[in-house]
Image (cartoon, rainbow, N blue to C red):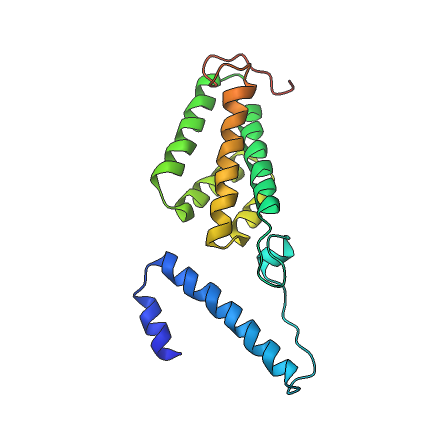
Length: 175
């Protein structure tokens, strides 16, 4: 274990996450085997964050539909929060949309998550989505954030009077 810690200290964060996910799965498998052999009476571990949210079952299979559904809700919630906060300033809304998309394209998923977290706090949106986002492992996070950005842009690109962008829209968030 000490050698593993030393090796992992020199790995990039993304690769460390992969190794940690595998270690958690291996630990569960080992405990299950020990329980099956009769050395412990029961095998109970607390659910992972992904299991609690229904993103993964006890066999480790991901529920991509649930991950994407929550990502979709997050994108919609954030977009409508931005529209509500800036309902008389369509140029600012467009600037925020451009900024979010630029960050999505140019920075790591971890940094992008920090951008989203900051926006959620600034706009006063539902902070539960932050927990959902951070509960995802790397693969699930990609599904979650891809769906989030698509729904986020949908609100601005299609729902602002179908103009294709939020620029010069005299939108009303109640619509």
